[in-house]
Image 1: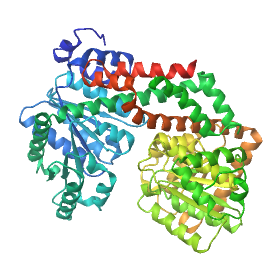
Image 2: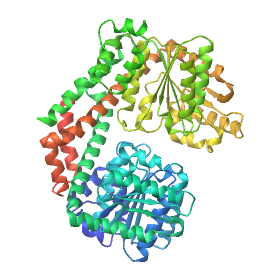
Image 3: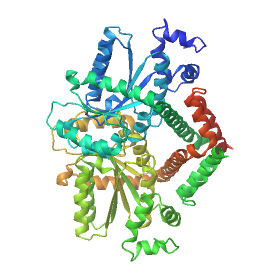
Image 4: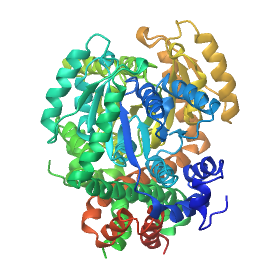
Length: 317
Length: 317
């Protein structure tokens, strides 16, 4: 891929295979992917970025697939990034089917990318953010990021979104787990999927009560049966309404500041991780401290204190 | 807790409640916990540290409980650190029962600590390493660390161990998943638990074939029925034999170097994470870059490059 000033025209224009190729470069943190993002970044910030998160088995992939179908039915373009769909037993397969279906129809109003989390722990949020910018620049007005949403990566990925949808399901047993997991705190919209199953009403009641406690804004608690498409248009309307609310209240600017902060910190963490792994063989200071720790001459805590002292003095000067 | 030079005598001597209190301080990364480890660290390196890892549902907690029972039957002392036992549905409860049982018998030859992973993502391996040193210094000749063993934390925790036991079970479906997960590469001993269930022979065959490919050393593939204690004495003998092999071949020194490296890097990551979270509000340089990224004046990649340049120049000088 040749990165030049006309990249944006080639991306939005005739070069059909450019987007998937750039996406691969960005995903792999390739230098030309970074260079492409440098060129494209000023053109971003137009897409509405929607995060869809929730516990494994809640039916996130099925819901996202139903959302895509509904969005395409109204002829809007949409891009989906599925982060680690293999984390659920069936999720990956469901989305895989959907991708194949879309590809068969050669539907260029849809772009789907699934990202595996294995072996890229630290850099997952960073790579996801890069893909979001790429799809934003490519002109997709709506970018959906599906993620399990736990751990540091999950939190980082959720904070990239303008609107976060938390998916819950009655058959996961205790909805109290969702309340306790901290997912509600990050959710702008909570949707109880599989609402035709026993326990759905109870889950809705519990979530309404809990949501009232943690959110200052009017709670948005919805229900859906994703497999039948039930509740999906209402969800999409709520997502649009949330974006209008963000824009009208000026909250969007604050969210984007938060997203930029989260992305830069995630990138910095990933870069530091990589340099530490290399650097511990190359940096004489680091090697010396590790050897002293192994020899029981210095405690691990003292070694870390020495190293962070070195590292952070450069940030705060 | 008063940390003084006689800490080791108080720890190994009469102060019954000192160890659990110190463990809490170490777990919370409290300054007096760090200070205690500084005093105690020169006395560590005697314990055999055994990691027990595997996919959720493999029966790790049940196996560890059976190991404890067997070790106590031969009157050896043992300490167990269960990292995130709540990640399996029943694991936490099984170990909880066991702890209560042990406590009823006031068995001071056993120390059990379970550590939740929630809300301490980055620092989990660091806190676990601290606990291992504490229990080592307290005189436990065997420290067992049970962990799910996936992700950066899992890998970091496994690399703290002298001997890594990977637990597999036939009813988890495809054993190919264990092969693919990378767990085999870190395992010194692989044990197929629930060996009385269908598919156990097939799992054993597959693992033997895969293990031959990834390990240079003679593979140790065992089987057990942890709920009935079957295979547990053989496992303990294999664990002891592995430690003897490590000592005889000089491999132990290399493992301890690797563990020290892993611990210092984990501690450094955790410390940097904390300082970044604070620092991004305090550090003018970081705040300025984030604001430029949010305003689309600078790409995230350029911001990260600038920051890592600042940070790592101090390490490599």
